[in-house]
Image 1 (spheres, rainbow, N blue to C red):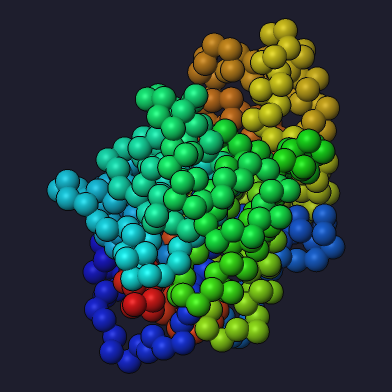
Image 2: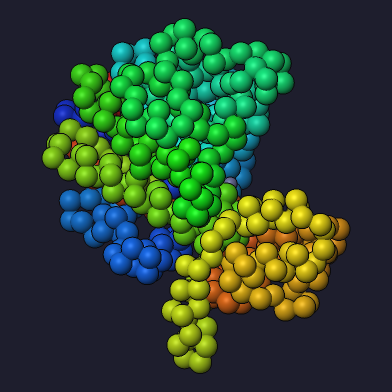
Length: 446
Ligand SMILES: [Zn+2]
C-alpha cells in the first residue's frame, strides 16, 4: 500500500534540530464533514469558528491527507491505525503492535523512554483503549485492556483519561491490584477534576471514570459530571505544562476519543460537542506553544467514521441552517437517553417522550414503533444493513429534523485531514501514509 501513496525513504535534507517536543493530537474517527459541521456549530454556540479551521488557513501551517488503511483492510480500526503511528508498520485490525507474522513492534513511547525522554497519553476514552495503547503497549487483542493497564508503568509519565476498572482489583477479571504498583513507583493517582487541577506531580495516573469519560453533551448538562470530570483541554494543559517545563524531549499524544463513539451512534449533537471539546484542547495547545520555536504540533484523525454531512433541506435549501441549528437544542447523548429509558418501564411512549424532551423533536408514530422494535427485538425494518439498528434508525429520524445524514455506523476508508505547525511541520504535508509518521517522530526526537 505504501508504494501507492509515497516513499518512506529517508530524506537527508530533513534537519531534526530544534525539536524539543511533539504534541500529536488525534480526533478519533473524524470524517471530513465533521470539520465543516463543527465550524457551523461553533459559530452558533460560541459565536466564533473553530481553531482547527483557523489553523488550516494559517500560512505557517502545513496540511495534507493521512492515508489510513491497515494491513488487511481498506478500513482500519483504531488499534491498527495507532500501531502504524506508534510501531511504524501497517498491521491487521484488532492487534496492538503485533505484526501479521506474529512478531512485535516496539511502541514509540517505550523506545523514547529508554532514551530518557518524557512521554504522555491523554484521552477521553479509557486510557487503555486502542489509540493510546498503540504508542505504549503490545497485545494481540485490543479488547484485553486489563493486559494493557500494567504496560504503561515506567513507560508513560503522564496518563490521563478513564478506565479505572482495568487497574482496580475489585473490577479486574484476575483481581490483581495495579494501582499500588503505579503508586509505589511514584505515580500520583488522581480521581477527579480538583485533584488534577491541584497536582504538581511529574508522574500521574489520572483515572476519572470506571470506563470512558462521559460524553461532552452530558457533561455540560450535569453539574455533578462537571465537578468530577476534567475537560480534554484541562487534561491537555496539565500534561503539556509539565513537559514544557522539563529539560527532556517529549512526545505527548492527545486523543478526542469519543468523536468516534458519537459517530458510531449517529449522534450528531453528541459528535459536535465532542469535536468542540477537542478543538478547545487544540486551542489551548496552540496558545501554550505560540511563543516556542521548538515544539511541533500535529493534528489529525486515525480514520473516518460514518461520514456525516449536512444535506440541504427545504426549497432551494433555505431551511438548511434552521434545521442544523436545532442540534444546539439537544441536551443529552443517545447513549444516556437509551440508558435512562432502560431504567423506566419498557414502553414505546416513554421512549418517544424522552426523545422529545432531550432531543427536541417528535417522532412520527411509525418512527416510534420502528425504533422501539429495533431496540427490543432487533427486527429488520431498514433496507441498509449498516443502518438497520437503533443507532442508525435514530440517526435518520433526527436527520429528518436536522438535515444531518450518515452513510452507516462504521469506520470508513477516506484519508483524514492532517495539519501541522512548528519545526519540521512540512514533513506532514501532501499524502502521508500513516506508518510514516512513526519514522518522522523517531527522526525528530532521537
Ligand atoms: Zn470506532
